[in-house]
Each structure stands twice: as C-alpha cells, then as structure tokens.
Length: 298
Image 1 (cartoon, rainbow, N blue to C red):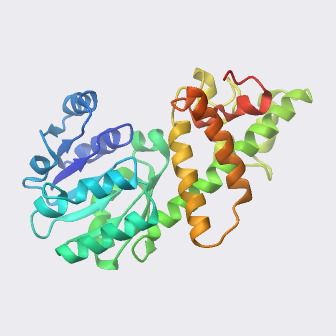
Image 2 (cartoon, rainbow, N blue to C red):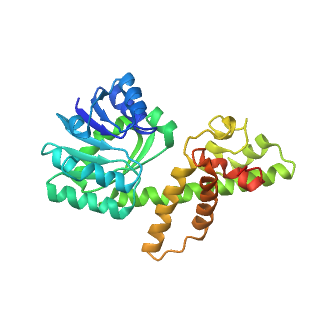
Image 3 (cartoon, one colour):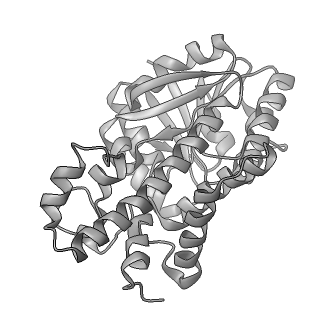
C-alpha cells in the first residue's frame, strides 16, 4: 500500500479519500477549510498544516479543487507541489478546470520532471461515497497506467481518454449534456404534471422510453418519485447551482475557442445564472425546475 497526499478535502475529496483508506492506503491531507480538515481527521486522514507537509513521504498526489486558478496555485510557486514534491511523485488532478489551465499544468509538470494526468470525475457526491465514480484520465499512456491502481478504489469506471487535457475535455462535454438533460427533464416533468399525469407514472414511462437520462433517474424534480432526488429535501445540494454554472461556463468557453455554437448550453447557463444571482447558488442545480414552473422565489 502507498502513502497518498490529498489536497482539497471538500464534498468530493473527503469521501474519495475514505475509499483510499478502505483500500489500505495511508492518506495525508490538507484543505484551507478547518471544518473539512476536522471531518477528514475523524475519517482517518492524517491532516497536515500545509500542502507541503502533506506531500512529505507521499508517492502519489491527488488534487481536487474548485477552479483552474486554484489548481495552478496549488501546483505552482515556491511552496507549490512542483517545488515540494519528491522526484518521481505521481501527480493526479481530479479537479474540473478549463483546458488552458490543464495544459499549463501538463507543461509545467513535464518541465519539472513529473508524470501528471488530468483525471476529472463524474458521479457526484453519491458516486464519491460509494466508490463508483467515472474517471476520465488524460495524459501520457505510461502515466495513465501508473495512475490506474490508485484511482480504482474510488471508481466504477476508469477511462483513458487519450492525450493530455482530453480528460478535462471529456468532462466538460459530459457536463454540458448533463445540464441540458436536467433542464429538459424539468420542462417535461412540469408539463406532464400540468397535463394531469401522475409523477410516478410518467417517470416509469420515461425511464424505459426515449426520454431516459441520468437526470431523470437521479434528479427527478418532484419529491417522492426518486430516492436520490434533491427535490425530496427542498433541493439540498448534491451538485450546487454555482458549481453547475462554473462547469457550463467552461463548456461555453471551449465552444468559443473551437468556434462551436452551443445554443442550448447558453440557455441553460442563463437559467443557472438566474438562480445564482438570486442567492440560491448553494442549492442543488436541479432547482431550475422552479424556474420552469414559476415557483422560484427570487
């Protein structure tokens, strides 16, 4: 078993480290949030006063951070990972960030003599807790294969996506589909309700028909239909609207960079921005259903 440093012990990072601990690895962690550090210590993570301290003795480093700027800061600088990690340490960034920042990390890692992979995940907090996340792993083939055994305790699927940054590209495109499907599910569910269909009856039809999707089966936007739906708990977050807005903006930026018209993505972004601007960005992103039915309280 190995010693793993983990930087970023938030809603995703903490349950992911728990699966590494269950697999027998030792995990040394750091986060700027004191509550996150406390919860991690209770889970068995050896919490450290700094990222550099967490790296001491680690063979592998995972980072799980909110934005590209955070990943760049964590890896760069005099106290960053590139400067303090031991030679030969494997570096794995599981953050969801923009492709340009991801490319910078690959380039800087290569210059510093490290193997680095971008390995964002899909599956949300539930997948992180169950160890069933899908990892999309971009990088040199040897580095991807070296990373695989450390990723597998947290994963249902580990998919090598190809060259550096392709993991991030896959995640951005996947989330674009996710949020568009989320809004289409909300519109169909509200229309079905207003046409007199029972929620559970319509759900049972859609999930075995051409309207099936992950948001339908996981986030059906009326309470009492799907056990995992945030609607059961007043849209308590499983994937916040603010985080969804960040991710959809990554897709739109990639669309601009590649001259790709993302009409539906722009509509979804505007809906998520309305939620965020109203101060409800900490709610689950599936709260857009309330925009559809007119019940959103801005």
